[in-house]
Length: 376
Image 1 (spheres, rainbow, N blue to C red):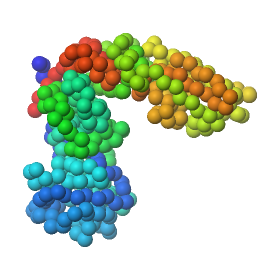
Image 2: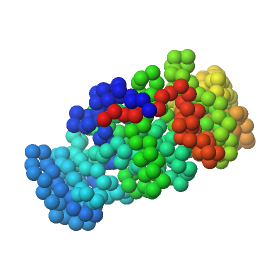
Image 3: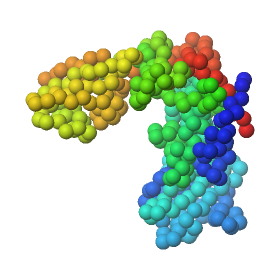
Image 4: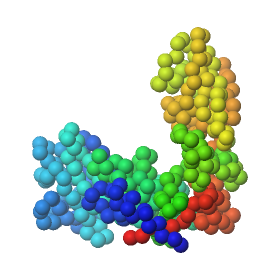
């Protein structure tokens, strides 16, 4: 397997100064009024320039701001302090347990941020169960592990101005520490250790979604840009594998007032909404925009924006076959779930069930890409 040599330089340039290429700083809590931490074993308190000392307090501890620093229960700390769990110990933050070092920070607005510094492979174990069902076939989980690892490296340092690399929510990838890690997840991460996807010697910017509805989408069609300039692995493929997904076909109903309110989130519609029709589509069949008509004029509304404003949980994708006018609202008839770019998770599941390896799954969704190893 080839080594992706330029990756180290890219990662080192994008990461926070104190990170190495294999450490991730992920925000668990950001700019909150308070947070709760609860160690289940020995933990050391390390303040800048100071020596580690044992954390004597037991049970759930409230972290809150104080003038010039932090307060952890009755303990007064400097404005940036680390909690370092001993080997085998973990620290609960909110509802989830974490095994990495916690960085407690006082924000300028007198709020608190909690960042976990954790190794890349440990980070991935905390991502997989919340981005793919941990009981799905191993080869599907391995494909997800490679894509999630590639995504993490490609986005390292994205939130550097906020003092960390990645978030623990959908702005990056869902991450909840060791909360739902099982043997299947550990195997998927271990058996793909260090593996990432590349394109022409560089790290590939990868994406994934639940179900493509029969064809994955060109990255530029989804988010703008020249479709012909999109790297070959991200131009989309026909996908016969995900047709058994429960998310393959769906309908979503919205009252006219809700549709109008969603449109007016970003547009000024002169008069009441009279109709909404599908406008342009891309080559994969995803709707690019809708035409919204009032009594006096019409406007074009981006499909991705309308989906966001109506609710992505209800309007599962922009791969919409037709609109059905009802007496008091509008029904969207669509296929798939998510933005449709990159790995289709349901398709990966079915391919794994059919005996295809994770390498074949990745080649299918990212044709022409290279499976490489990060050089440490």
